[in-house]
Amino acid sequence: MPLISRPFPITGEGNEHPYDLLIIGAGISGLSMAHSAAAAGLKVLILEQERQAGGCLHSHRFSGELDGFWLELGAHSVFNSYGNLLAMLEAARALDRLRPRVKVGFRMLADGVVRGIPSQLHFSELLLAPFRLLGLKKAGRSVADYFGRIVGPRNYATVFEPAFNAVICQPAGEFPAECLFNPRPRRKDFPRSFTIAGGLQTIAEALANDLPVQYGQTVQATQQTDEGFSIATDDGEYRARSLCLATPAAEAARLLQHDFPELSAALAQIQTAWVESVGVAIPKASLKISPVAGLIGRNAAFYSVVSRDTVPDPAWRGFTFHFRPGALDESGKLDCIARILGLPRQELTNVVSKTNQLPALRVGQSDLIGAVDRALAGTRLALTGNYFTGVAIEDCVTRSRTEWERLRRECG
Image 1 (cartoon, rainbow, N blue to C red):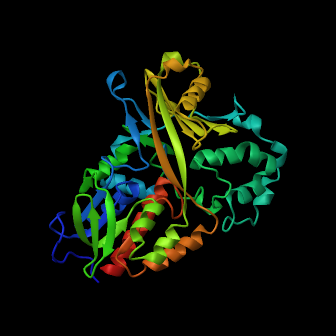
Image 2 (cartoon, rainbow, N blue to C red):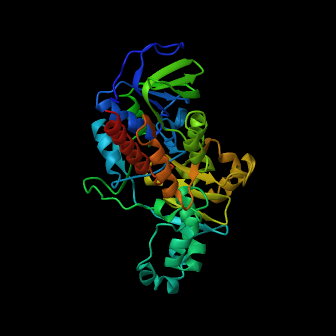
């Protein structure tokens, strides 16, 4: 079945021309899929329910006296091991906008006191770590099981568990060890860690500028047809030969429930973790806290605090607190932020917030995704997102590239 446009009637009030590939979701996963398909000459359309591209790439840009200052309310970091992302940015002519991150360290908020991370380690337990690592496999083990065996129970409880929680903004203990810190080759022509001018959402915007995206489109239902797929939105109907869902797993499960019930049931097994993120911009002169990449929370209401000190500004500093869901109300969050930063609460005048959702993966994820991929084989349906092999940006881009290659191989 070739992956090409063929004329057939349109019955709704949406676009009058069918597409080769229609993608739901303009986060980094959907944009990556669209980038590959458009580069191959396909007629592509992305439908996005928000008014901007980005998804988990969300950079808040302040205005007024803070004009030009931004904070990340979603993902924070990109690394030179993200080869597929870098190749895509190169094709989008965006590499000249990359900015290296200043090297400042993380610290830990341990039971309400800011401490250096080495001071919290039990080095006697670490001495045996190289020997415990021998022959130990990640596959089939949780983060707690795998890393706890290596570093020892006291180190895991006091340092590594809070650090892993901070990395993925959720309780990490049951997360699959194989979905965390996947090794990748590094490109030595880039700094190890970097961002981009205007924040990481600029990556999504740079890609979206070269792609057809329709914003404010809430998809109500999808239907498989003889010719491909019909997609119903609030504004009408779209038709396409092939369909890609680049949405959270729960939304993909909802949209596939009618035509792909077994696939929908598998996706419904993937749980969701919520993160309540609050960012603040503070005049430099008001703060005494020394430059820091961020704070790891232990026995705290937040998983982490991520600082803009890695991308210094002459007049302002910024901090994003990633709070545990339901731990504090809005007033309590502001009290917590003021206390940690050593400020009167009334000085917190530049405050922004966003609630993010992430997949809460569990041991057995590889088997679940294996079943999903077997169900997708031979179809014109593609699935991509951050719930396959890990939640890193590169995991999303790599999944999109793999799914695109499957569509091209099997359908054209």
